[in-house]
Length: 258
Ligand code: OGA
Ligand code: MN
Image 1 (cartoon, rainbow, N blue to C red):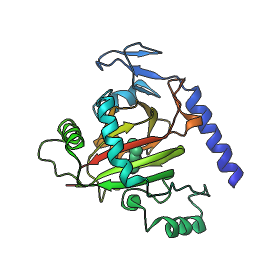
Image 2 (image 1 turned 120 degrees about the vertical axis):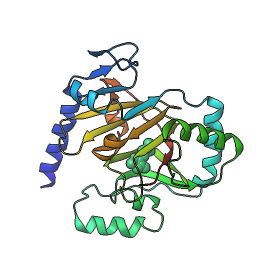
Image 3 (image 1 turned 60 degrees about the vertical axis):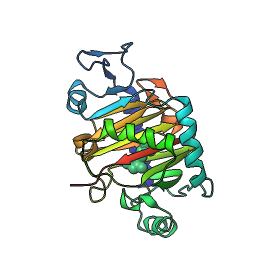
Image 4 (image 1 turned 90 degrees about the vertical axis):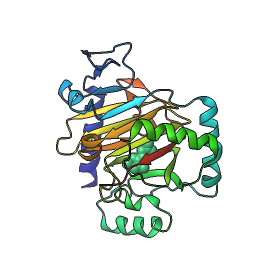
């Protein structure tokens, strides 16, 4: 069984590498196949799927400056450094014993228990922060202003997730009970690739290139009907181009369900 799962995973990985990547221009108007210079952050398995998600995904490159990244890093580091990175020593999420162990190990610390399936993240530590210093608060105000509709009730604490260089996020959908229609995340310290895969048809996928200091926003169907994941270093390619993954910290704002 394990062998079968491994073979299936390998086949899926090869499929992702082989499939041609369609890209949008940054204006989002012209769709062309193959590398397009001004198109920096979105590619996917077909034109149809790109058209379907185009209004629901967004990456704003250089949303924060280096100074702002430093300010955020300094502030989140205080909450993170007391914690240890958590690594799973098992891979088979379907195994009852492993799920039990995961619950046993992670429940006391795991702020994500309300957000996604047990075991969705590997090689991470995390914290939440409600009060921020002036510089960070003004960055977060900017994030909220561009990501959420005016008046949308937000989840108070901001989620901070620190992925080790060996860490990655497996495909999952954030809990619909606890989080609303929009997820907005700043990426610090490293570039990475976020993959969205349609839940009821895994042949439909898009990749987002999340450059260091960018802001990504997932809305509506892209958030509810697609799983999202952050690729591990050895699988981190965008449109055939290697995107080395180092330690990465994300600062994530969410709204509340209505
Ligand atoms: C999560 C998640 C993405 C990120 O914590 O649920 O998907 O950018 N995080 O770290
Ligand atoms: Mn998530």
